[in-house]
Length: 482
Image (cartoon, rainbow, N blue to C red):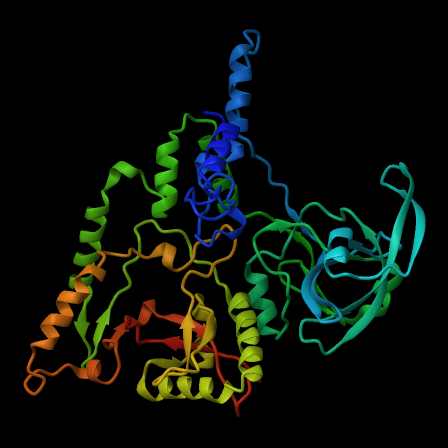
């Protein structure tokens, strides 16, 4: 069945192109789905890249004179070149949103995407016609642009300026963000924060040309050990230079190329995507994995000197590397703080973490050991004004991840589903003699007190000082009770 026929069938059933379930559209789908072929949000069975590959393969087979052999799609060592990109905030009246900016010294003028200018409802202040000179001496025809005056600020909103820009349908189709690497830690050690960090390649919303860029430079420059150069602007720090691909990245791309040139079973692709385990389906069944997770728990659980259960996290065998999402955790921390200040709940949120520190649920990581804790979990505040017990509480997001990287939940075996056994447990507890049975912390709060093993604990970027966040630092989660 062709891809167009599959889409037509889903439309008739009012199904989602992402998760294949009925009742909602793809743009409203909240289920986490990731194609292992192109990394987009759909199952491999709906991947257009697979169908393109099949069409190319069938065309090759139909040509009897074609004696060429299939080769690897990527065998080059071409590096990524980082342009001066950063994230800023733009506003128009009550509307405000983040935008990706590139500072281009080769452009005389500044530009904004026409679609973005329309969405933000920026009013044109004039019109200008230009002929664009392209690389190689090629010139375009006369092109008319609307002029808009755009208020643009850094993420902290401590600096704002107004730049006159021309609208443009497309600026850059795809340029890389700052990838994770040793340069991120080096910048962090120098207390330098770059905003455009990630593993994906995407377009830009705004281009700032030479006519304006000079006035935004502060003159501060840092040369990193990797050869990259950090430059400070009034809108934030940016990074430029060449990032050479590691051997690991080249091997990964070669494996994907071989996979695309081989015969594939669509049902197996979908099954792997659902489970999230990159091993052959026939290697073990779901029950075998659940039993292995349970056996791992029984084998590693112990009681420490404090009388608390200590367990090891059930990592999936051969799981992918969990990316350090420090920037994501820090960004969500700032947005959470803003929300709490708006709702006058900052002190209540602060008190929850103070109580956790006092009871040993979390610990402060010594400054000398901060760099060795590489996995972070963002958190947000859940506010329930009508709750009789806890009106505000933190909720951690173990599913947070960067594009093309796995989350913590993706790397842990879930084990058997115990939801159906809750009613039986409650019935048993109802018949227990509470005077003769010690339930420990279960009587204090609805969680059993468990600690993760020391070498498997997870850091979360969070700290309060005097009712406001002034210097966020990592804290260590030790209590993993549910």
